[in-house]
Length: 196
Length: 196
Image (tube, rainbow over all chains, first blue to last red; front, side, top):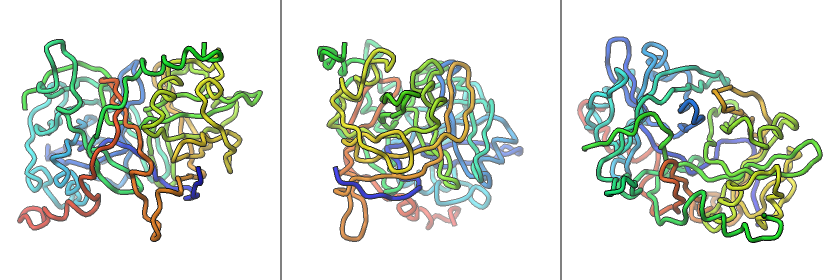
């Protein structure tokens, strides 16, 4: 496949689209749109968020030590993009976006009610990277929309309708079709002589 | 929205599906399927990979200090899942999966030729998290499939056909439809009195 060299940059995808909720010392809630978010450990369950150290959210994380990660469904693409364009320093983003806050169960930071998946985290460490900070959060609780579960407790991805972010291309996309099952489909290649 | 509590776990998505290529000291190439991969800094351009410390890939990263991240297109779902099921300790995964390796330009680790986006990285740090290691890589070069570019140099996401991984649900999905443009669509809410 013929390829073009882009140099060192940050073109990378697919990524999640999330809203990071934090509070300042006075309890004012801020929402930051983030795609540099992901799981980094299973034992203990840990999630990492990367952000510029001048963000209001970073100041809030240092002040309160907790945050929630709220998955953005495709239906809220405008609200999520708005929260990425405005700063919490001069905008009350929960009010201006029209999103609803509800209490979390393990941390003082609220959840975004319209989000189909919410992750409650306690800050357990950070790593400095130039102007950026990688903040590590122990996962204390996860809330998933009840509509996603069937009678056997299996989750249907379509109920979450997660908004996928393409970094570098700067586009938001929805999910298309299921293409396979992890930890199963690859078994087909076990028959290969060298794969055994 | 009614929600169900899952407790502390690692149900989180959407995530990228990638193959991490590394070499051991003898130069043997290993491919590890990874979804815990993402950008963590723009200045300097940095990517993080999280993995269990007993993985062959972690041993290789310590031995050689470099790796490549190769985006998996939806057409290679079986090959990618295979590389996640087998260990490099007893399987030559490049040979068994049928994937093709080609030289990188800045690091000794090869690229996966069939991948539409390859990221070359040099290890610049790590962070310990229980049994897991978060390895930080400075991005040295990115290669993108030439078929994605139009005459003005814009990239078409469909040419990459990225495979999206849903952690917790354990499913692979393709992209569906474009739902919006980042840093633009949210401007619609600026008209709101409180949003100015």
